Length: 185
Figure 1 (cartoon, rainbow, N blue to C red):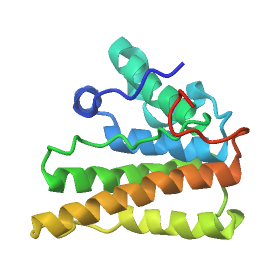
Figure 2 (figure 1 turned 90 degrees about the vertical axis):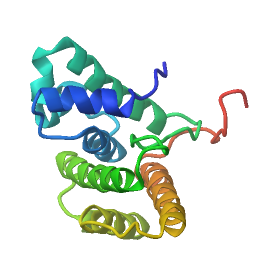
Figure 3 (figure 1 turned 30 degrees about the vertical axis):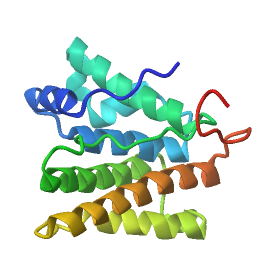
């Protein structure tokens, strides 16, 4: 059953309070990274690897579990409702860009956790997309001075990453059935 992602800053605050090693965006990226390679990856194993600090805090544990469960559900359903866990679009663009970079870093980490030995083990299209995601994560500070152009470029980049996650997931672990734009189809 779908429950949705937690609110970005709620999770971010809880993780900061615990002095966790991952941000909210990185955590979601890491969940997606392990799940696109292995949809049966165990939550108990994953939380110990990325958010062990949350195991002694009920609120944090529930939020971290919600992130993993939502990623698992949305990557394994016929509905194409997957989104990245990022700050809302009314937040400063620089914060959104930094969160996207953290998400990409988390995704790369999740791929490594999944047991993927090398990018050469991926099909060519997936490998090229992952290489681009790694570059986004390692890009450093991005110029966001031209607000309109930067915002448009950011929206395109988020969509590139979002759709790429769905495509690599489908390439590595096909979902049975016809894709649906909404659950009522």
